Amino acid sequence: MISNPAIWAFRSSVRCWRHRAVLKAALQASDVKAWRWYSTSIRGGVTGMEEILARVVAPLPTYETRDKSPPPPESNSLEFMHFYSILDKEDKLGFLTKLSQDFGVDHNNLSELAVRLLDTQLRDLATILQVEDRLRYGLTPRYKQLLNHISRVEGGVKFLVDLRADVLEIISSKASESPHIRDLNGTLKSLLSEWFSVGLLRLERITWQSPCEILQKISLYEAVHPVRNWSDLKRRVGPCRRCYAFTHAAMPMEPLVVLHVALTEDISDNIQSIVREFASLESEEDVNKINAAIFYSISSTQAGLQGVELGNYLIKRVVRELQSEFPHMAQFSSLSPIPGFSSWLQGLLSQYRKEGRGSDLLSEQEWKEVEQATDSAPGTPAMEALHKLITSSEGLRSERLSRVLEPVLMRLCAWYLYGEKRRGYALNPVANFHLQNGATMWRLNWHADTSPRGVASSCGIMVNYRYFLSDTSKNSAVYLQNKVITASEQVLGLVSQFQKNSKL
Image 1 (cartoon, rainbow, N blue to C red):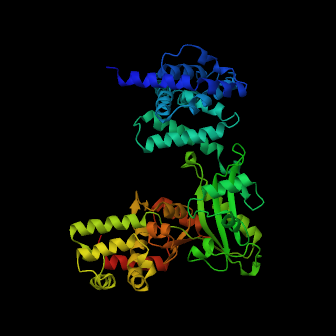
Image 2: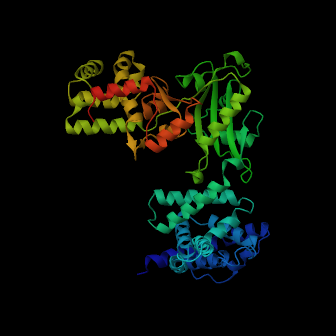
Image 3: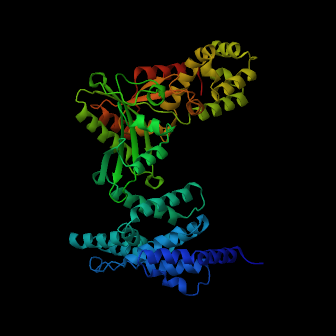
């Protein structure tokens, strides 16, 4: 019986030979001679990985020669990129595991440096600082040098962004529990945070005159309110609308994070008036009627940049841009979806139904109204009817049902946003994002998103996070340091109603 590793190695070897011609042509087109190793006998997929890694991951220069060693040839980076690009998902896992384990930090050398640092504590400060610098250099993974060199070749930064996306998928799917993979992720995140620092990003306003490729990507990347067609996209970049994106010189024609803004007279309380009304494409902006900027969609486009702060800087830059264009503008607010609210509420109802605690969630009078509005019997049938209404648009279409559901769902939603926490911070990711930026949880809006998606995710409710510019720094500090949410009287009133009527 052939062992699994042997089968895996054989399959990988066959795959390498199958792609041999394709890879060789690609490397020749790039004027790279590194394809020569494919001409040698490859004993298996694992061996092929070992060979390429041994060749392209250069040894870390000694501390004394760190600034004098010549850089490795560019072909090393290109060969690594080409090899990785033809691997399938399973082989990428093996390849990244081997890279992170065998070409990371030299732990033996690090232990020696740590002992030496302890021995120098009674020496002069200059000696201590030098040993500390050696230790700091010793903490550098060997593969970090390769990653740095990859970033300098054409397409290298985009390759590393996508590489980190693969690493994040490995971690989230638990395909590997290796601490080395997590260390590789940390190294990539640190490098990408440097390369994508706000000072290196370019703010671009997207208009109908922008390159078609950019407009197409703006449409494809829209994750909050899908773009229906080209006319819809034209409206979103046309009069009384603004679309901004951060771009980077190393990734041309690739928007990194996109922000859509509506210019309105007042702070909007529903998304239909922004993305679904069919205003004339030829209409002109009336500056006198533009008093508010509504951030109604923000989308990160690169999975590999997760955790790299971009969205908060984009909002701040856009606020400055809009203030320059409309000096009188003083109202800045989001109109945000509440992903996860419906699923949280369904789970809560299921839990209460099993425990027979329905009376703890709604008042006796409210349960009677639900029973009457749904023609259901008291107890479990009424809870099942409420559960069904949460997942359908029936409750929004019927005025009678809507009148019964509004006070119940509004206070439950307020509690979900304000009271449900993860490690002391807001459980809802959109709330956490805006609160970190210093926004105020300002207003919950009923019937704000009546689309099937809006009803399914948040029972049609949306929330305004308002940016009071003079308070954002203080609000952000209070939230991040003390985990205190700044909220309006409306939100706090709904939370108070929840605490009075419900028992979690």
